[in-house]
Length: 126
Image 1 (cartoon, rainbow, N blue to C red):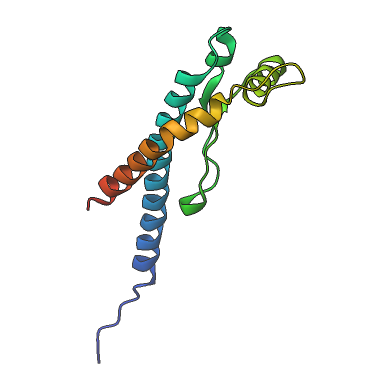
Image 2 (cartoon, rainbow, N blue to C red):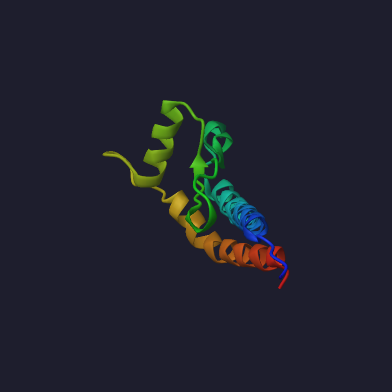
């Protein structure tokens, strides 16, 4: 006669904790990196009208874990502001684009990547 114990419920709880931790870690990391990229965009955005700068924000995180994504840029703006931002970035028939989003990306991506790495290391407590 031996002692029997079903560990399946314990294992299920550990797996649930792992999923929650993975979601929190990726969410924290994405937000840290997104903040830096957003600040970079706010520095390089054309300042001639304030509506474009006011429309810059982070979007909602979509997906989970290693497949999580976040958008950064013109969020919740009306069609005219979106069009204006597009023309400022890529140009039009009568003007050359200023490439302000590309400039923000190039200036900020290294720092954002570092912030993401630091956030993950901190959350994993390494």
